[in-house]
Image 1 (cartoon, helix red, strand yellow):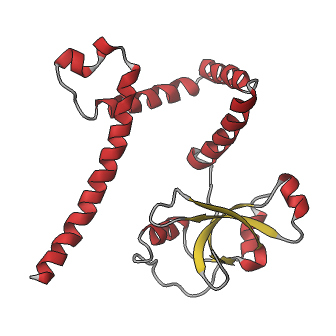
Image 2 (image 1 turned 90 degrees about the vertical axis):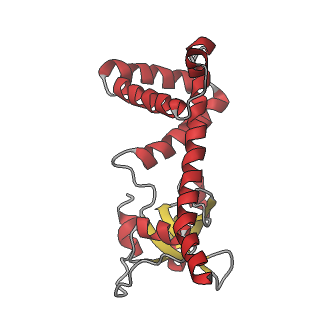
Length: 212
């Protein structure tokens, strides 16, 4: 009896969680229908709400924006728009920071997480997986003596939240696993471990050299 119950859970829980996540994403995207005039919305036209119509509209807007942004006229419009935003004091800082992060995450050449590493966090003796994001810059670098590296420590099971740390390179151990494998390991709370490999972790300095 117990065996069948656990087997059922193993089959249904991933399905329910996947459906729940997708439902949340589609529900959020459906809010794009609020951009349409009342008489253009599905409820006004058909007399009922159709789940997913907003998601289709969102994807369509993203696609059309991409088409416009890739031609010469669209690029000029974006440059004018960005110049306008850069003149607004508070908006300028937020927009510039978010754009830099999104360019790194979503562009074809972007690589937000360069390498999976092992660090001691939140205290000495406790180890967790982190990702190298670069090296300290600006005035921060002037106050850090020695060789430091910037790392992102994600939370489990939701890796979109986490901690940004600047640590001595000597305290960071490079791991011989891909970023995807490390993320899967974190999200699964250590249940889905990467396949064992011989201990030939890449030197961290090689990764840092690519940052320059």
